[in-house]
Image (cartoon, rainbow, N blue to C red; front, side, top):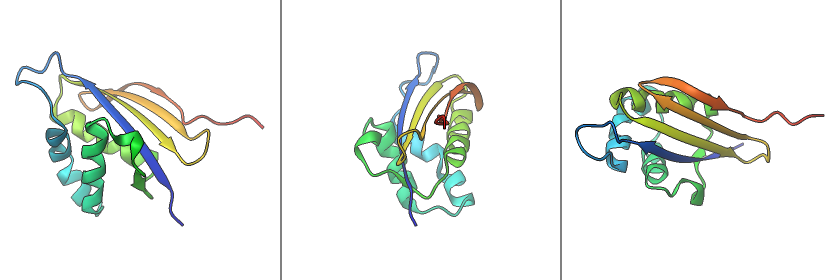
Length: 118
């Protein structure tokens, strides 16, 4: 059974002294993490799309839990320690929505996933 998560990814690179962060730089920072987890190259394609602002328009990441996506984002954030990343994940279930703010590999703020009341 498959389950897809769409990911919206933005960042504030005003403190990044080497220029502007690009979607290619973001996906390059995740290559080792993706390889260690034995995920397919399609994950990097999905990440590049998320970083380009197209993450909500695609089917998304297949069978990758939110926690694993957040860990990947933390790894990316460590590569750009003075950049703040903002992520929003949306799963197939209505209430499967979460958000994270990450800087220097640390979660600065988090919300969700939402637990619907009974």
